[in-house]
Image 1 (tube, rainbow, N blue to C red):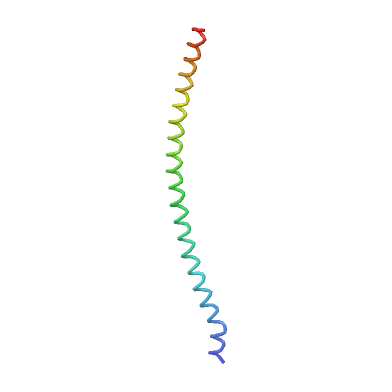
Image 2: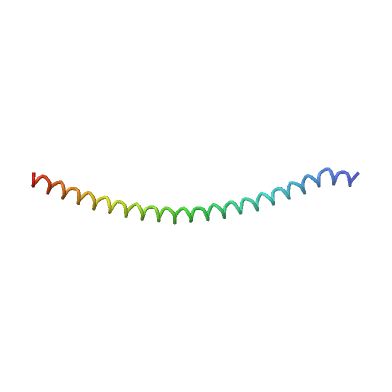
Length: 77
């Protein structure tokens, strides 16, 4: 009777403990993956912003050149 009680209560408890351990390991891996992805995003965004600033500078330069050309064209007309 005592053995039957152990198997009735003990087996589900052992299975639950195993499941909790597995979930803890998976959660730790997810946290590590999330931290890694976050640092990759920071690096990627930094490169994107640097590239956009370069484009902004080029656009401003082109705008100045076009303005000078238009001003010269008005003066000649």
